[in-house]
Amino acid sequence: MARITVNELKARKGGMPIVSLTAYTTPQAKFLDPHCDFLLVGDSLAMVVYGLETTRGVTLDIMCAHGRAVTRGAKRALVVVDLPHGSYESSPELAVASAHRVIDETQAQAVKLEGGEEMAEQIAAITAAGVPVLGHIGLLPQKAEHRGAFKIQGRDDAGARQVMADAKVIAEAGVFAMVIEGTVEPVARDITEQIDVPTIGIGASPACDGQILVTQDMVGLFADFTPKFVKQYADLGSALEKAAKEYARDVRSRQFPGLEHCFGVEKK
Ligand code: KIV
Image: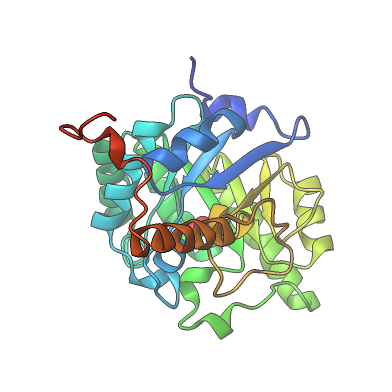
């Protein structure tokens, strides 16, 4: 099965919407792979897997471990791995070294980093070094020191102009597509109309060239906080709770369905 390429995704600008979800483990990647154009190993795993307050607490080591787990499970979808907070902002050299490490260790096809104008040099350096970059503008979770600091972007004219300027600069710097997170709808729509790389919305606009969600949010596996824009397609959290309850009941009542298959159990 041929893997979707960066160029194929770029060519989807204005065409068939791009489908993306986050993935963090091999089994999860296997389930999602047939239905997604790209899988993002997002640093949202800090919150939805590791229970941290923001995305800031994850390291490059952690992202590489999860990135490798996901590429083991994804055969068709392109895999993008987030560069975590602290691994790219201070210089283009650090950004290139981190991007190379992620690609070498995970065998993913691209990296993502957060930021607009202020990250243009990093984006240009990573793409010049041969690693495709997915941009991320609008609400930037890595900038938030606590969950209450996640704020919709582009509400006033100056804010809207800034998000548009960020989009233009990172497109020029070479991103193959950009995530637009948490902006007012007309801003994401205008960017999608004016920029010639695909836009991937999350809480941004249905007009974007594609959409991404945090998988744990859309299947009910992260109960701490679910953004209003997320449609819940399944309630796996409740299913897990129910299974654990039934298992506990069986064990406590010494019912062991399944254990009759154990090696050495006498057949009746
Ligand atoms: O880390 C993540 O999951 C992300 C998505 C929200 C786009 O960056």
